[in-house]
Length: 260
Image (cartoon, rainbow, N blue to C red; front, top):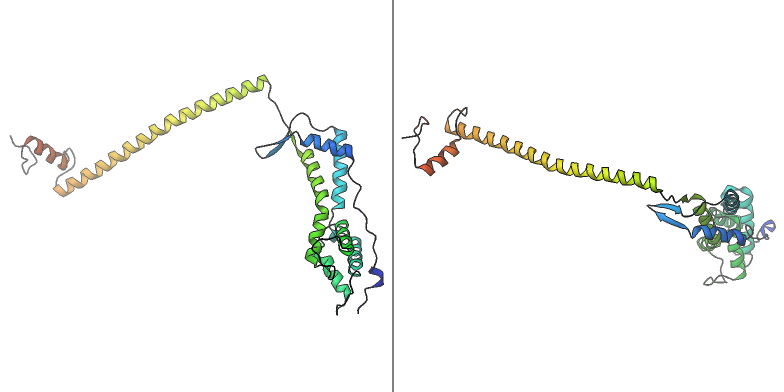
């Protein structure tokens, strides 16, 4: 049996920060109850937090952010996380053939995106057998330990998100009578501009269509004259002349003049 390094068999496990003050928690909740989402923005009705209230919220936010700092950002945190993992593994008879330090380093690498307190919490629960569905006869995989550590972060992440929501919300602005009047005038002008635009569009479309039709008729007339072998200048369209002849019964001479 390979023994674990003696300097990595114990670790102290403690919470990340003290629980949020009840008064501050209620304050955050009271502001969140007045937040609405308007066109993708968080709008706070009533009034914004006072300077003192914002300071208290910001301090708590910064504390939770530090507590949730990934262990990869601190060599000391990585060493402490390794000690917690080594302590957890002593709950089993370690029979691996390789260097146990490699196993511990592998766990630390896999968990490096998580904060120290969450890793310690997950290790403690596994070592004590508090995790449902996890066999007490085998150590957990790095992936399972990662899931447990994520769960340990949930409450603090929720707290951070709620404080951030209050600190970044914009104050709802209710327009006064003068502003409402200016808004109404603006909407009226916009409506008139749109109406003029709607009237102008069909007119322009009709003019374009008429121009296109005239051009098509001109080209057709020129082709008909070319086929008939006559000069189109000052002439009636051959197809029109034929139609007139059919309706009047008159016969055209080869010179293009009508018979009496």
